[in-house]
Image 1 (cartoon, helix red, strand yellow):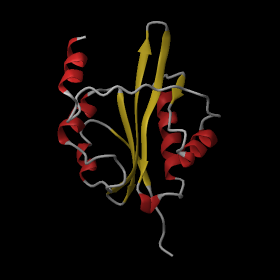
Image 2 (cartoon, rainbow, N blue to C red; image 1 turned 180 degrees about the horizontal axis):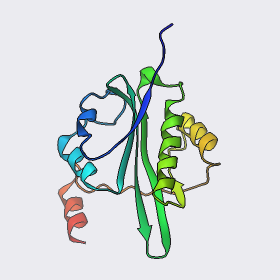
Image 3 (cartoon, rainbow, N blue to C red; image 1 turned 90 degrees about the vertical axis):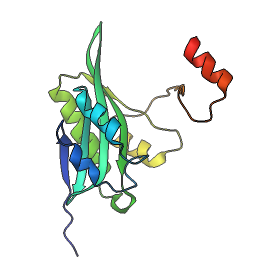
Image 4 (cartoon, helix red, strand yellow; image 1 turned 90 degrees about the horizontal axis):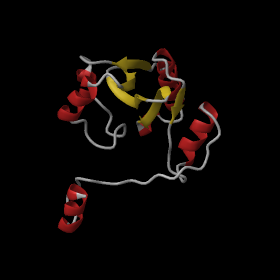
Length: 158
């Protein structure tokens, strides 16, 4: 049996090239150089990747933020693991690594969410973070191809 070795790496500005070799299951869309540059230029954006050799087989993205009345908090935005590498603990390791990173930034709280029917993610988060709680999310899309002109006008002028 082949040895299974995955490296977790916190990427920083200058590490953009690591994202040039990504399993297509990891992100929702192909990595875009423009958005990658913007992501890395903002010090509040964070990404930890799982590498199998030089292939990115998993990622966890987050950002930390502050409020006028609260210390820094971390929002874990996305977690993705290639289908070929699931059920090996990579997702759990990525979340745990991001939580550890949040602590180094002085974050006092971290949060994330998933869809109600995403049972594997819910099991992971409930086993890694805490029991889930009911949360309502309202998603607003602004610049989406095919958006009716009247709705586009309402979004941009109101």
